[in-house]
Image: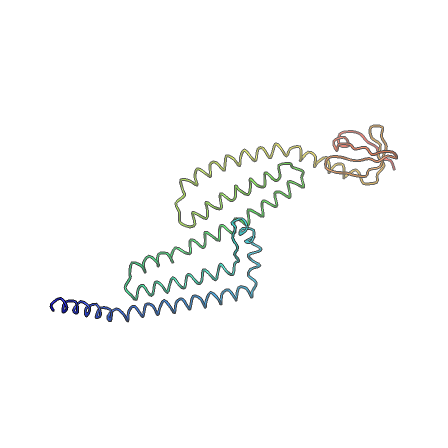
Length: 271
């Protein structure tokens, strides 16, 4: 009979403690439920507002779709912002629920996580904007070098892109609060040396291109399509003036002269 009484006393104590903690637990669950509903509602409102104002066009302007293809997943700016709002509000609700129940350690850890989120968001923003700028510069350099006839245009634009991408990643990681001082110092030295070598190679390789541009400008300033020209005992009509050549057409054939021929030799324009 003594054992039965002890068991009964144990259940009575457990029941009493449950009754004491139950209101606090229910209040914490209520805070969690209200926070979850608020998070869902605010995320929905933010998503609708951003879609209506067509903020997704901003994502297109920032090449977010291109970035998502590179990373093999799909997202849009309104969805990202709405998810951030949802989890921020929901985490605040979890902190409030943990505080009400008395789970101080849990609430402190979650508070530290919430305080760290702005660094993560700023690092992500730096990466997206930096990636966009790098892509823009890559396309610009490629177009300019191709228009100049520089054969290494695609290679140079790719090197520039990855050069900038490394700097962007290091900057983003630093903004996120990671200590990358030792790594970044070595990488910057390597990138600086590589940039110097590349600039010298481009300078030497583009010397002929610059010379050709000068010659072309000289020829175009003195010759016009349709002019009748005599050079090297050949008389013909100018039908083409390009960066590399001048084409004369006679009655029977066409003669292709290097641009340097008209730049360096005497010729006569027949009126």
